[in-house]
Length: 178
Image 1: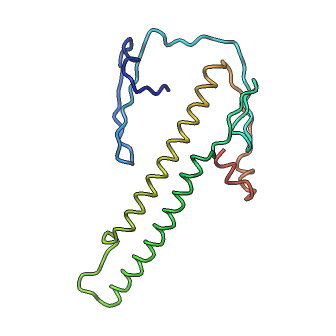
Image 2 (image 1 turned 90 degrees about the vertical axis):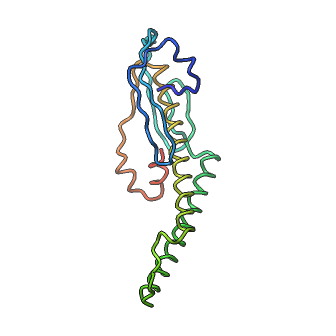
Image 3 (image 1 turned 90 degrees about the horizontal axis):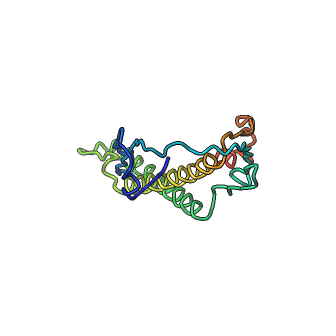
């Protein structure tokens, strides 16, 4: 997977297939499947091993380490997401309470959840931050994968019992993110 923003990279390529994808956040993405003359990768003959741990995202056998994903920028986005989830939850509870009051008082035109703008505003913000976090994580993991593919012909991963490790509630969140 190679992300490009300039079409000059695609001058000597034949476009075999394309897809226009509508994402949940309202944006469109164009995915091109191309074929070119220089598609074959050079074989290096190297075998690489990858060790996953909590301190670093992964450590490669040649000494290269990829730090854990929870850096400062992502931490800020996670905190914003938590903040808007809290606000959304409070607005939802308040809306449900007022809807129940209208129902109890037999109001002629009772309110529905669509009538509460703050709830929808907070929901949009919450979804926006979650999408940003998801995109940043995906880009980071693509960078790691591209590094491994470019430098090694054979890649060996350790076999972990992730479900067993997730039962330890002290480190379950860290293991899930790793």
